[in-house]
Length: 184
Image 1 (spheres, helix red, strand yellow):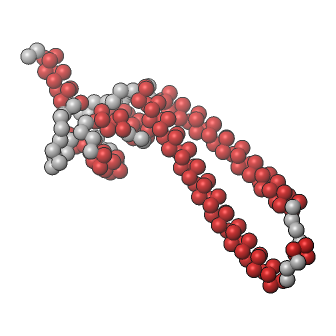
Image 2 (tube, rainbow, N blue to C red):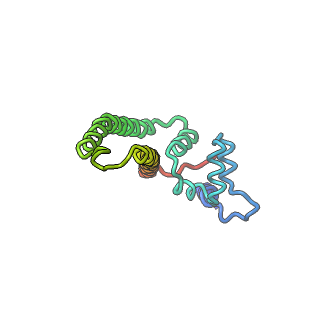
């Protein structure tokens, strides 16, 4: 074998070490630990059962981990800065959109209250006595509380979905810009 064939065989062994037995952890996990990867990343890769680093790279949903790995393997890289700049630009745009939506929320609430008042009926109109009114008010307060909690849960879910979508965009973008690094 020539020296270039030996080097290629070594690279292939790192990139595709073959199947791991249940008792043997893939070699890339030890290399990640050696390079200082966080415990959460090691756990994710271990639980995911990825046999090779390229397999884990393809499945990763954390752009920050991917950028860290690229920078850790080749600290002198400067081609990561434009990617980070794109992330910052997107974050600023998303923040501006969120602030616009938040600024409109009080206006929307005031419009809803005005609409309710426009269609409100008095107790006299309903011909109910004060005890019935108290029960009705209590029921209305309970319903409002449930509605508020549901709205809060929906807002959290929407935020989670937006965060997941952004994370997917980031990791897909990184994969279009960079190949999986080779650990040493």
